[in-house]
Figure 1 (cartoon, each protein chain N blue to C red):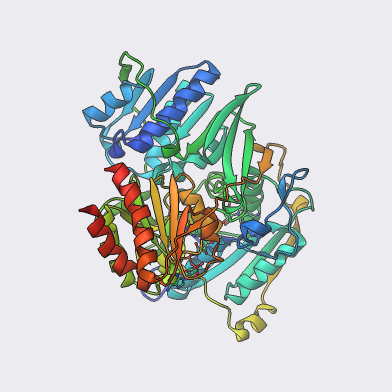
Figure 2 (figure 1 turned 60 degrees about the horizontal axis):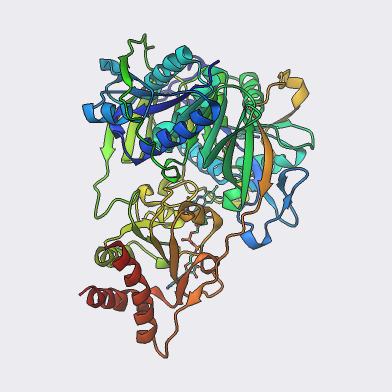
Length: 322
Length: 278
Ligand SMILES: Cc1cc2nc3c(=O)[nH]c(=O)nc-3n(C[C@H](O)[C@H](O)[C@H](O)COP(=O)(O)OP(=O)(O)OC[C@H]3O[C@@H](n4cnc5c(N)ncnc54)[C@H](O)[C@@H]3O)c2cc1C
Ligand SMILES: Nc1ncnc2c1ncn2[C@@H]1O[C@H](COP(=O)(O)O)[C@@H](O)[C@H]1O
């Protein structure tokens, strides 16, 4: 085993904020271990993706044979497994996207390592890798020491600074792999129509909860968001009611966002929801219940029925913008 | 685990045998202000809180029951826990699962995901052949979400994560999987393990009184973990620190003599941030 860190990226997301954060976490860990940072990119990678990664890593391996053009769980797993086996790293990092969530435990099992999820901090103590993460739906924070090597961890990527450029571009190698016949196949990809600003990297976010009482009030939130240039998200309850699609969900098991301001409308503020906004710079809320837990995390708030607040708020913000 | 043993439906599709792994956890709805930890045992103090089935396991059960109702076949609920965990199986049976199995562990700290996966795999093999194995995407206590993938590897099955709908398709199943950009349709012709996430369509049903009565006559097998012959010497992770982050902030409630004034004050605070961003 080496002291190196491998980051596993899929080509289709490009060198986006998640990939940048994974690379940033990887670089810090590699420095602590005294090893180098190697990136494995699987899929048909655009030139700018490869060059973006090569600027921050010490080595890049691209696996882009035709069978790997699009993400398929079994073949991508095999590709990461085979490349990691050759590199014998101390740690393998993935991002908090569907690919990372799906492949981490299986990749760890195949490499004989230890899987861990949702890492928000990584450090090395007496040679062992420790991962900080939240527990009990955000009510506690835990540090796990991983007992087998390699550590295979998906990290909450947006919480890590992007990796700094190395100054010289890493050598890019192409891998030729023997892939198994996949036992599952993604036969259709449904790309949801994006209305307004995407939630993931938004600087302002308005979230709606069960207290809205239906799908229509989300239109009012969209109008409010339009004035604010904000993205719209939701609590799990609102998603489960079918008022908005699952991609709106913010929280432990939804999106984890880090806006400058999060405005929660008719959301009680359960710990699992707050976990998704713990990196927000400021929080505020509209809620009829002054005792709602959300207010314990808010910088400012208004205790009122949202139906009375949202329409004049839109007007007022419009005026203030002028 | 090949789908060899199953019978045919009228329309040529197979009747599916489904295994659902259900975990009992400390009620995740305990409010943050009542939440305490035991620094010695490195876990939450139960206090007066109840133990409940993990919500994603219930979403998995619901998904499985809908699939069985559409195709025929059976749903088996499996849990590895203390004696008390029998309760989650009783609830699964009341939700109309066909049979259940409990693997009993000692009272010590909860075993890690690899041990759990090995025990569940051994129990699954003993229980028979399954076309679909379902687990929750993660549990509401530690939220690690690694058991499913480890179990898939133990059983040699392909896996699809973050599935919220499973329907019969030819000899296998078609799955809808939530993604960062929307959803995928994934198909398989053989056995598969899926991790289930929540959606509008798999909100767990509330057991009917009649089904609760019936559940007591349904088969529930109990094993002691030692009986399964699992070597659980290998751990993957040890909890070395556990703390409660203190992050409450003082909320400033906007003031004003009437609604207009309050909304104005609220709007100004928001506009400040908007202005700073530009
Ligand atoms: C393992 C696990 C994972 C979870 N993951 C997530 C997650 O990722 N994201 C998430 O959001 N939840 C998650 N949850 C669920 C979470 O625990 C809460 O149940 C959920 O967040 C509650 O949603 P809510 O605040 O919209 O609804 P409620 O708790 O019902 O709150 C509604 C609020 O609206 C207010 N209200 C009602 N009417 C009005 C009105 N007219 N005007 C203004 N206010 C009004 C009420 O005072 C109340 O505070 C998870 C739970 C578990 C167990
Ligand atoms: N002790 C257990 N008994 C049965 N199923 C379990 C157990 N632990 C985990 N699982 C399954 O694995 C899923 C993810 O749990 P975890 O990996 O602990 O977050 C759960 O939703 C269950 O379906």
